Image (cartoon, rainbow, N blue to C red; front, side, top):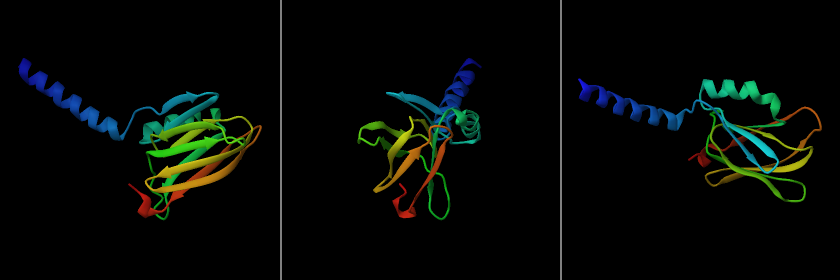
Length: 141
């Protein structure tokens, strides 16, 4: 009986690990310098958590495939200020990345496989800015 319970625990632990790789229960919060970031959005729980916290961030990025609109994860994101200084350099764990930036103009680069999309975005003194990066299907990993 003890052996059976131990095997069940091991099997369940392995299953949780595998599921955890694809669907985390909470988005990832981090800080790089003065920039607060929240990224994730894989699964309903993460999307709900991010939606709940969205008002705390003034830049909201979404990563998707052209045509199908399929969400993408693992996108490398680099944000530079008007002077060219990197203020954020990270890999988004899901299709959404929210950042709290100071007012100003920023260059945002998003990279998947061999495709990099760049957009200049102005962050207002109040409110927020939404942007969707749409990648060509052949660039998907």
